[in-house]
Structures are given as C-alpha cells and as structure tokens.
Amino acid sequence: MKILYLAHRIPYPPNKGDKIRSFHEIKHFSRHHELHLLSFYDDPKEVIHAENLKKFCKMVTLIPLRRRRQQARAIIAMLSRKPWTLGYFTNPEMWAAVREQLCSSNFDAIFVYSSSMAPYVSSENGIPKFLDFVDSDGSKWLQYARSKSIPASWLYSYEGSKLIRFEQEMARLFDASIFVSSREAAHLTGEEYHGKIHFIQNGIDLDHFTCTRTGEPSKTMIFTGAMDYFPNIDAVSFFAREVFPLVKRRVPDARFMIVGSSPAGSVKALESIAGVTVTGSVPDIRPYLRDARVAVVPLRISQGIQNKILEALAAGLPVVTTPNAAGGLQAVQELPVTVLEDPGAFADQVVRHLLDSTDTSNRFAQTREVLAKHYDWSANLARLEALFPQLNDGLKRNFPLPPSKRENCRRSS
Image (cartoon, rainbow, N blue to C red; front, side):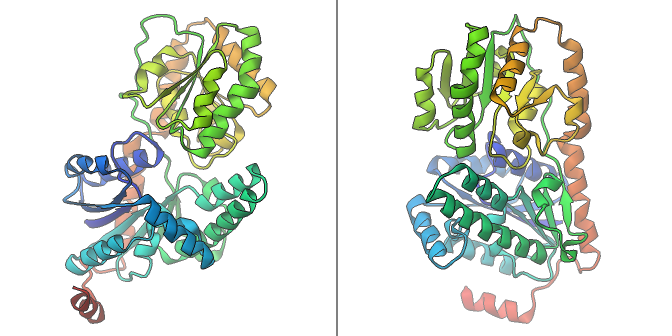
C-alpha cells in the first residue's frame, strides 16, 4: 500500500512519548508499505533527522512550526471559539504540502498521528483514513483545569470541552480511530462510532532496555521524562516536596534523580532540597535506570500509557505510581507496579524498595515475560496494520481523483 503519513512532531529520535509511538509505527509500516511523511518540526536542528527517516519513508517533507507565529494563530482560533490547539497547528505550508501530495499521488490510505493534524485531511473521501489519537487531549486539558485556579482553570476547561467535541467530530469523519486504551475513548460512546474505535497498546524494546547491573544499586529513586511538560513538572514537584521528605526520615542517604530534557525553572529549583538531582538532557537514560533501585511515577495528570513505566520495568526496576498514571496499563496486576495516591503510603512503598536486599532475578524474568506478551511493538502494530485491508475492501485501490478535485489541483498549482 501507498500511505500518506501526517505527524504533528518529527518522529525522530524516538526519545519521548509521542515520537516513540510514531517512529515505531513508521518503522513497522515501512516493512510492507510505501510511506510518504509530512511532519512539523520545532527546532531547525531537527532537520538533520530527515536522513534517518528516509531509511523508512520514500518521501520526507518537514515543515517548520514557528512558535510565535503559531501562538498568534492559536489566539485567533480561541477568539473564533475554536480550540487553540488546532490554531497552533494550523499552517499554510502544511496545507499546501498536503494538497500537493494528494493531487500528485494516488494513495491507498491516509494515516494521521495526533488529532491536531486531522483537519488537513478530514474532508478527503474515497481514501481510507486512520487517525491515531493515542490519547484524549480534551480529557487531558480538563485534568489541567482541575489542577489550576481561576483564571487558568477557566481557560483549560474551555480548551478541554472544545477538544472533546472536536475529537467526537473527527472520530465520526475518519474510518478508524485508534487509542492506547478504552479509557481514552470514554467520550466516544454513540452508535455512530460502532466498529470504528480500536485500541492498540504501546510497546517497549526489551533488548534496548536490558540493563546489566555491575553492583548493588544506590538508594536512588528515579523519574524520567521531558521536564518542560506540565504533568511531569507537577509530578516531580509533588514528590520532592510531599513524599521525598517522608522517605528521607527513614532512609537518610536516599536520593531522588530527575532525568529529562529542558527542566523548567521550578524543576531546577528542587535541587535546593538535599538529595534531589536534576540532570537535564542526557544522551542515554539507561545508565541512570541501571543505578537506581526504584522508579517513581507520581503523575497526578495523565492520559494514555506512560512509556516511562514500561522503560523502568524493562530495565528491571519496580515502579511506584498513581492511579492516573497506571490507568492505561494492561496486565498491571502481573507486574511489579504498586499503585498508590496517599503521600504517606507512597513513601512507605518507596522505602520498602530502597531497603529491599532480596534477589530480584526471578521478578525481573517474570516482568520481561509479561512485557513481551502485552507490550511487543511488532505484535501490537501488526494488529493495527491488519485494519488496512479491512477498510480497503469496499474501496478501489489507487482510488482516482474525482474530476472536480483534479480541476482544483490544476487551479491551485
């Protein structure tokens, strides 16, 4: 099949949530299909990654997302009573690039990663359209609203409500909508969505995250993630100020390691707490996982499946997390994951892991067996790929452009 793939972020390197999933989709689809990628990029330095993506895509077009210009478009969208997220990702260059591709090539399918890119092809007919929502942005913004005070809570509530309605509309227009779990699609319950909603779990590269421990790990708790992302900022701030002091009372030499790129000022300020280290960007998180004893994922705002949990488990670490962060996990009862919300109980469980000196080799083997069963990228994405012929059955392959569209293409060229 010939597939047009749209992404709101350049899907390389696969070093953060949205890029990990989109990269693995592209890598998997490229084995049997011809991919044409259209993607935004935020940083001019990211353009060099086009060469890496050309290993998997016949065509790669990267379009700059200039922050100030897009922020102005976001404000205009909000004033027009639309979600500002859509305004931020509205770009004339992308509209032109999408139009050029659809006019010059006969695609068998259109695959859209992130609902922010859906408007570019939502009106296309005759070609099967797939939309990987991953999770619900609308639900996430509503969580933001509950964590903020006025006036921010009003703004976030506005955005969340608008995005929920937008997601419902896109799910009606696209032939198949994909989420990481049923929790993410809770607002899509009408009969019009019957047979169009599908759930595809994230995966984990077990070989990549195998960590060989050369000695006894230190009494270190670790949190990994992009540290300019509000849910992560909120999580480490909550843990460092409310949970970590409880741990230190019982384990004085305990350390809390925050590993991730672009730490916000409020995150850097946490280093004033004895025992807290903020690394900033690191070339490889595996050495930090190897030297830790337990991963903490105290997210109070969370959607989807947390890759940081899967990575920690693959590296052999137990995980202490919150109900929100664990909500999308499958087979959580079979994994060394403790789900707690109360700061005191959270601290108790962390202390148990820090002081645990038992042999964990059996637990590690069992964990990897469960991860291989439920979180194998190839197996999960094969289920997604199996949807392609199902949707093509009722449509002619290489669907020809209608005369009116051909005429529009000539006029716009």
